Image: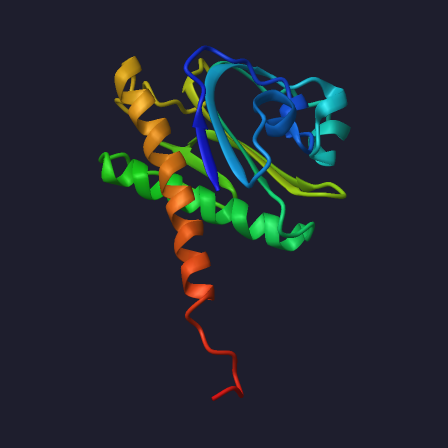
Length: 186
């Protein structure tokens, strides 16, 4: 699995959730997590969550850290939702390490009662995709600035630490797969 932190501002509009986006954009043909910071404005045609789409909800932030994850080992929807929850737990764990207390409800994190994150998971014919966004600043929702993580250097370090933690988790899982004896085999 490869982690790429984009050095320049990059806005999320929902099109990045399409399969093979990392390959088309960056030549990455393996499982990946692409991390970037920019505005978020998901257009209705890119909205995956049918409840949000039916309610004509807007998914918008002036400044958001986005994580776009792609796995090629399965197209199972249940598995990608489990991976999304694992990622949410990794983010919550990292925030706790910085002294920021959040509440997790499914794939969402809340800061002082306000929603801090957005996330969606889905599948295509070739892969599983996850988008996970964390508000850096927002007038209505929870955000990293309110949490005391506001300077650019801290946010870049936060982005790297989370991306690298997710990669480590999957490398460790792969290692465990290769040392576990199947049941019924001596």
